[in-house]
Image 1 (cartoon, rainbow, N blue to C red):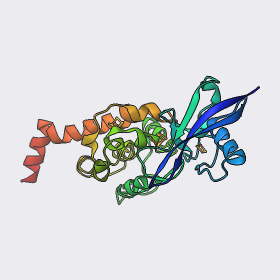
Image 2: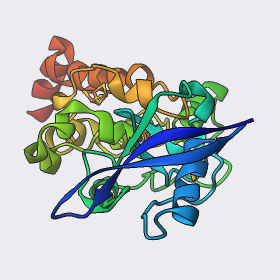
Image 3: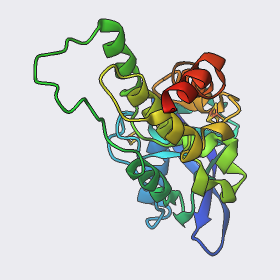
Image 4: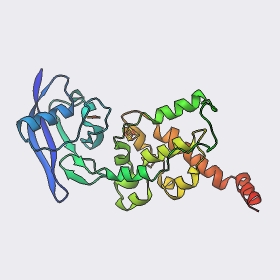
Length: 248
Ligand code: SF4
Ligand code: F3S
Ligand code: FES
């Protein structure tokens, strides 16, 4: 069964732009990305959109649909009423390159700032067996497809360009937490998380978790445990006293 939908798509570039209206055919089972492709094929061949897998796995097609951060390829048209106007805009937190394509290089900069996994220097292969609980923790975090919808949603940078320099965002604070909780990682992640990657900016609003298409419990399983570890180190009187005594 087909019908005609009303679409409103943001078109423009870094200097200017606005919403453009379209009436476009929708067929049963289609997702928003199918409709964007139909617009390219039939009405505006130069409409820019980034996508790759159309299966929710490459993380390329992130945008905002009716103001909500979503993957274009995983948002079924059946969730909208047939007479509803569907508005598609680029992610707001990142600079627009053209139409629905944004410059997400902020995220790659943040990724590079995190030192890699650091096992003890003298550990030989086969000397350590991971506990299942440690394996599963990492596996949850590694479901991340780097769509950056969590980064786009977090109010710390969504409304505050000036915070970008000092805040890694939920995706990368989660990476730091993954490494910090890894039983073999010996790097000091706690000081760095707070002082260099802006963990203190996060006030656990959980908006990042709500939009994650992989349903990763970013706040509960990564950010809050990381905050607890930072607090333990800084404010626990025993830890504090120990650090004073051993420093002498
Ligand atoms: Fe996307 Fe979730 Fe990864 Fe954030 S944590 S980049 S929302 S998959
Ligand atoms: Fe931002 Fe998520 Fe913290 S939305 S404030 S990183 S809980
Ligand atoms: Fe790959 Fe949407 S096209 S996640």
